[in-house]
Amino acid sequence: LGLIDSTQKAHIESFQAKCVHLKERGDMAALSSCIDELYSASDATYKEAAGNDLKVYVSPYDARLWEKKGESRSFPPGHKVIESFLGGWNVQDGQPPMVSYKETLGAIHATNSIIAQQRYQECTDPPYEALECDGYESLRNVVDEVVRILHYSSSINNHNPPTRLLFFNGLLDLMCDHVGNEMFLNELPWNGRDDWILAKRYAWDPLHNNGKNTVPAGYVKEHKNLSFLKVLNAGHMVALDVPDVSLEMIRTFMNGKSFSLSGGSKQNMIQENPVELTNSAYCETEADGVIFVRFTAEIVVGVCLMLVMLLIRVAYVAGMRASKRQYDLIEMSEFKDQRYTDEIDSEVNLSQGKNVLT
Image (tube, rainbow, N blue to C red; front, side, top):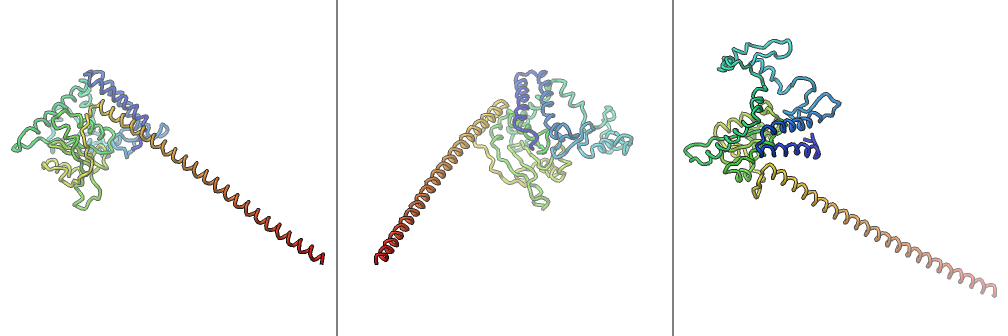
């Protein structure tokens, strides 16, 4: 996206490596502080993307959008209206709720939230704070549950359909980005991990047959009951950005269909040998690859420069020799012309002398 350069990337990755080290040590309390530092470093990348002078910053939820500094969040569009319908909040300052939210909750059978004294908000802090207060230990339980589902589903017979897992990201979402999700999925310690890493990728185009679209809707990777879909032209709120694509995604998933067979076209993106993609190994492999590519590029550039200098030298010497040869030819020609002129003069003088004698 061009928001950061390689130096800023390395700065953020240094925080990430520190957090990974703390996670591997099991120091969850220190990990919480480290994650806060990582968030602060990453937040600066989009908050300063327009410079310090402008009053706007790139939305972390959609890299295509800009939000105003010092003002309440405007993303996603229309979320204030939804909060009014489901939570009874004012649409804006001084404007009362649009309807009685209790009637709305009754229509969708969600009145238990009233009994629990909860009011709907599009993005609320208590769930996040509940996860943070235990040092993100609850997140580890989620990982264990995902691995358990993958293990169990891969070992049952065809009479019991496996529990399917679908992870999806909008490619323009900076808050919950597809790169982090892909790294997470590659790290899952289940018995299909190596095959998952080598699994084929497909361009997913569910709307092409209906004549609604001419480009893929996203890219999908599948193995057994695990699917990962990257949705194009979408940010954090995929369903709002591409509702038709989102509907096809839900239909495909709920009907037990394969994304690769539902409008998928195979891509040549198969990795020949599985790589041990632990967090540290991933960073080391990436760093080694960068160093190798850089070293190779420097050698190639150096050889090319030497060849160019050699060609220039050869051209220069050839030009000098050609010029000298041309000069010698001109000098010789002038010498011959002068000699011819002298001979004519001598003959004229001799003829005149004979005439005088006569």
